[in-house]
Length: 247
Image (tube, rainbow, N blue to C red; front, side, top):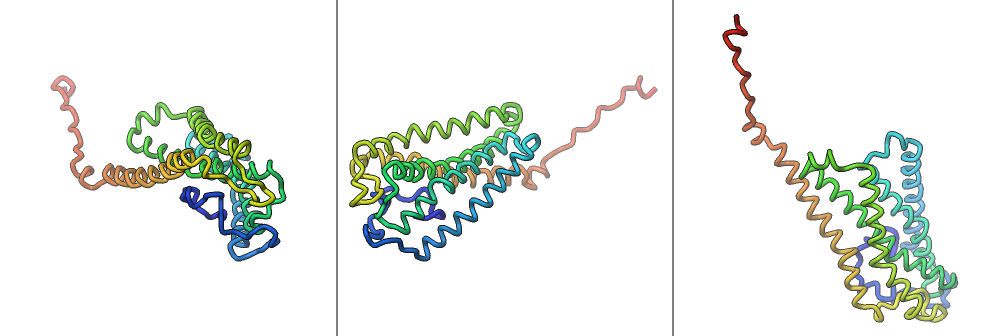
């Protein structure tokens, strides 16, 4: 699993995060995938940090209601880049030889579920916002505000934590295999129903909605500006002047 992985990876394939990685005791091993992950992570940190800095320095003009969703996406990306991806690279290099302790393992699994899911859901908020603007433009102009956008983004994070965080906590308290022998792994077998449901709700459904809404927005925009509509548009004739006005 690397930084360029799609967050909607099949949950069953992530059983125990990975079962075919380097076995414990073989020592660090850098390969093409781990080096590429390191390069992508470094590039992502630079680009995301630069974009966030631009918004911070120009917050009086750039933090519009729509840009709140972009900032939310940048924060989700940055959270993955600073918290999850470095630990993921460490696990790629060291395999099941996890010597960072159980708390860091919990942080890694938190990133694997919550932070990975946040990126897809941030994109979903953006596409739903565009859907609202295209389908109900008057309602969008009168109702949408920066305050509402912030509340929606905060609600997304609360929703993801309510769905995903309990599974990570239960794994840490009751189900996690020994780090010394199995490394940092999530015990999917003990929470299979939870894992399958959260995979669908938090990873698969957002991607499906993004694809469907994207095509609908393109269709709606094309039909709204189609030549047929412009051709059928008629200019209302001006009212005739009364005889008194003409006189």
